[in-house]
Length: 229
Image 1 (cartoon, helix red, strand yellow):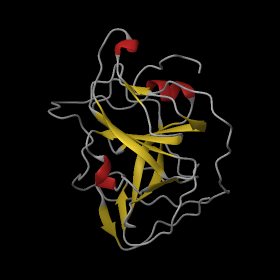
Image 2 (spheres, helix red, strand yellow):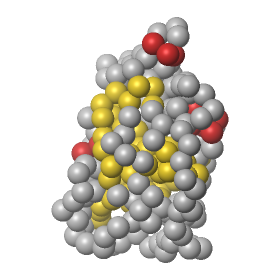
Image 3 (cartoon, helix red, strand yellow):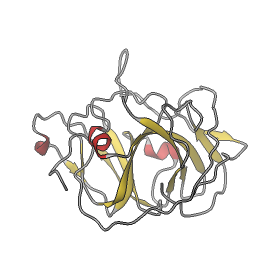
Image 4 (cartoon, one colour):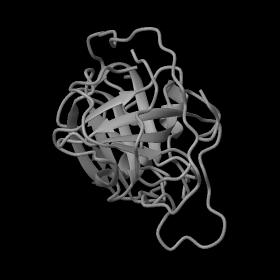
């Protein structure tokens, strides 16, 4: 997927099948390696960009199992009563987030890496389940805007470039307008290859912010967060 910039240092935070960042003693064993004016949801108004192939090598990854525990990252809409609506028809992927101070968090994310998945994204979703957010992965760098059409849950979004470097982040508000063009458009500060969406205000809980980096781990795609890659 994307290559991380920077070394692995400090602690490891594991957020697989729990949704919270928990210190762990051992490192994860892994080797990593415009068509529409507005796309529905918090997804994508695709824009032309020069083709750049993300760096990567063949990998073998061991996806750790983590005991279910208290969630430190909110994954359900505020004031949600009863059963929520979770993403449907998406695989998951493991990602490593390294904060500016070198702390690493390993998280489980829903994966939207083809056009129709990026368009659906988190439309209608009120409960992320065992994942802490969703990764929107593009084939080439983009500067397309995201919109919150049909998305009832306040979200935060962070964008990362082709090298895994942090670009920018914004908070996004629900838009239930009948015409998507009436919804606000949210744009990154520069070209990006991956966008991460979480419940509003939760990016910092896994270390996403100025100076952070992101790596999506090849070989960790699975039907859910509890399945080894």
